Each structure stands twice: as structure tokens, then as C-alpha cells.
Length: 120
Image (cartoon, rainbow, N blue to C red; front, top):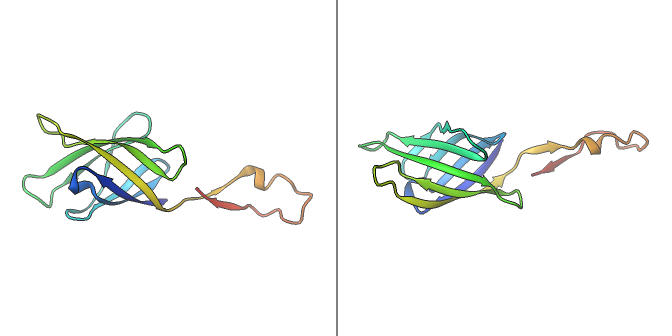
């Protein structure tokens, strides 16, 4: 599980989210509260968020891919309206998953045989 700070041309999407295994677990808008994202198929991190704290409710579709340096995601968001507006969207890691590398445990000839973790 990793926490990300989110940013977008849509002010509703500025906030934070929690991601586990390339799935958005929760999304918090700085202005509209916390919602549970709905996963959308396809490669990358793709999901919908629906904020019902406002009338009418606001739904956004987010399509993104992992950054090459591994510290976040970038892509686009649209507001799912008939003339759907499209804005940039990004997420930058603020806490990271702990990942165990198999290569860190395969050399039993050394005194240090415990798995090592690295922030990703």
C-alpha cells in the first residue's frame, strides 16, 4: 500500500489516494471528501471516482500509467459529461510499498540472509 498526492486541472481531483498492487483503494478530494474508486479495465491505473457530497454528484474517469522513475502516475481525467472536459492528472508518491527482492535472499553464504526491503 502506498499513498500518493494527486493533482489535476480539475480542482475536485486535487488531494490524495491510496494504491495497492496498481489498484486505487481510496481517493480523497481536498474539497469533496473520500470515496472508493471503481476499477476500470486496461493497462495502468484506470478508475472512476464519484463524489456524492455535491448535487448533482460529480463523476470522473482517470486513466494513467506509472512514471518511468517509479514514484507516481501520470495521465488524464475527464468529467464524464456529454461534452466531457479533459484535464491532466498526476499522482506523486508520499509513502511507498515495501518490496522484498528475491536476489536479496539467495546468497546464503553471507551472514546477512534476512530479506531486505526497499522503498519503491
